[in-house]
Length: 218
Image (cartoon, rainbow, N blue to C red; front, side, top):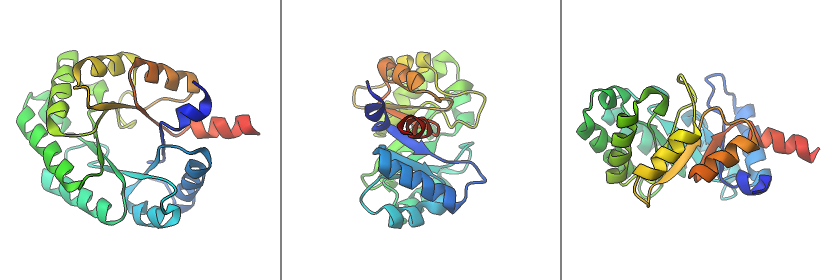
């Protein structure tokens, strides 16, 4: 798989709390130049980025990020606001504490509510796999499969670990066939990205890959 094919699966990402519009604009320029799947940016910049890229690039943003412990009502409001501002895709963080407690029904209902608020846009569910046991990972795969969400996503990139090939393979085994997988967090080389794709990932969340492609292009 060549670099451009991998980049076509990348959500080109900038989510640092220090992100400025000039940095987001650069991410958008690079996403358009290298034909990435989307740019994943802070909610504050969604309207401006959507106006800037028009229909040339998908805009993704995050909900309940990075800790996931906002109330469902707040997450729904965030989602509705992002959609109004032009977001094409939504990456939400589950309530990880409820998952750790085995309280899966509220987790399921929250994902369903946010999916309804997406009004047909793609929803990716961030489960922060580094904080879950293997049994919890299997359980969250079942919940995401029941929820109507489009993707299960490994990580925020802001916790104790990121994506692993092992987690992607486990997710592929335990989510329903119509649920896709996004691997994110710590993917800094094309070799890592390809390994995730070979394990079953459909999308890659990364901030470093476009820079590598720009360097190779000279």
